[in-house]
Length: 229
Image 1 (cartoon, rainbow, N blue to C red):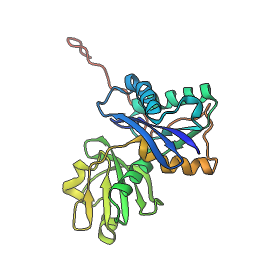
Image 2: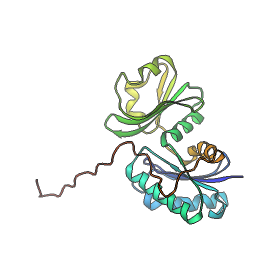
Image 3: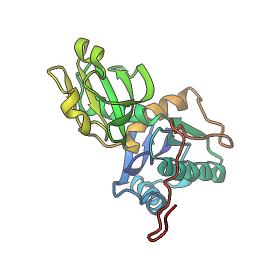
Image 4: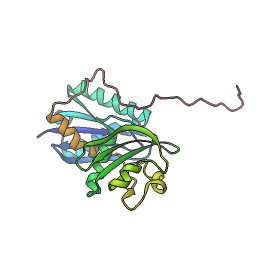
């Protein structure tokens, strides 16, 4: 039996799950936002306690590898790399959009295509397209959503738009064959892909691993009341 500890910190949801092969034994999560650094280790302890396991029972550690929140990805990556070093366990990375699509396929079966979306800003999303078997049909990228977005897919296939970026696209993309449903990223949705990578021995180099940000981080310019350029 293979136990993989999975972490999802790429969006507003911070969650931790522990699996036995492809079965989720326990999952703990909060969606308060901006609390990842405070909650991640607490959730990890609760998750292991619920499953009746300890760190010594963990065979590998999986991280949701982005794209997503820069801060969230940094917190998750630093936590997971620290655990991998301390426990001498291999690191597995699963693209965040792949995890969202996996969860959507399980919750909403029967669609031909699944398009996970992560809210970026305004009408921009990070997105990709997967088929019903989990094969990628359109690679991850950033897109400003308009009425012509995914027109070919919407005309020729049934498609589910999911993730925290789907809600704002509802009026533009919904049709007879396409549905927009807001779903939340969760560590438990990483489990099938994490186990598949474990079986293939597809591990990351812990020392050099970096999450996939898709876009460069641009720090907001601080504004101090009473000061002007």
